[in-house]
Image 1: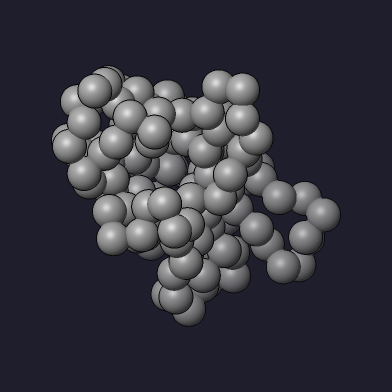
Image 2: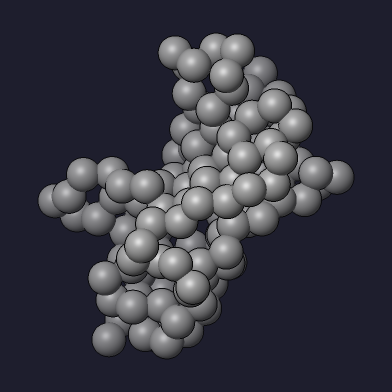
Amino acid sequence: QVQLVESGGGLVQAGGSLRLSCAASGIIFSINTMGWYRQAPGKQREFVARLRPGGSTNYADSVKGRFTISRDTARSTVYLQMNSLKPEDTAVYYCHSYDPRTPEYPVWGQGTQVTVSS
């Protein structure tokens, strides 16, 4: 069964750091593209970061230079290291997995809340 479980969210002051984790089961990192998205209150879900099987990454302009996506294959876990956090980073963060063999069935985690106070 394919499943993503996020953790690591919380409340942090502006300028602080958090590391989100996404424990993945039933997913092959050498095939799946892993990503992080976020949704702030009253806004649409937006792309944050992406890590392709070959190791290349993409970031939203708003987080470039502050956030880093990585993976630990042995632990089947994807991370999002978030530094220099800003109040506008406040959102529910979702882990995402895309398997090119089943593009019509992307997998989402349940989300973890990140709140950045000013």
